[in-house]
Image 1 (tube, helix red, strand yellow):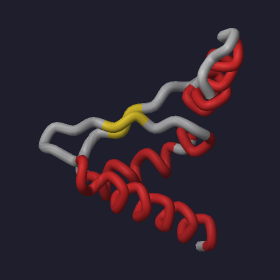
Image 2 (cartoon, helix red, strand yellow; image 1 turned 180 degrees about the horizontal axis):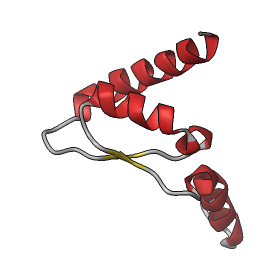
Image 3 (cartoon, rainbow, N blue to C red; image 1 turned 90 degrees about the vertical axis):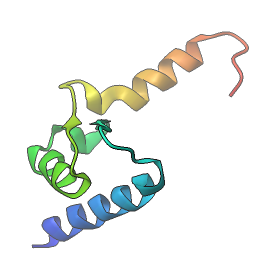
Length: 77
């Protein structure tokens, strides 16, 4: 029950933050640690009423982006 409550809270936060940018036909892509959770993906789809995609390596998206940014000499940070 605690884990479901945590996920419900995260889902509600995402729905609130995306509300002003949502248009018909919007699709979403989930990255980060929860991207491997089928329950999280389904909960987001249910609340957003839109498809939510992910990728098996999506949990590494932030780390990959940081590594790419850090690999550029004199990159603006």
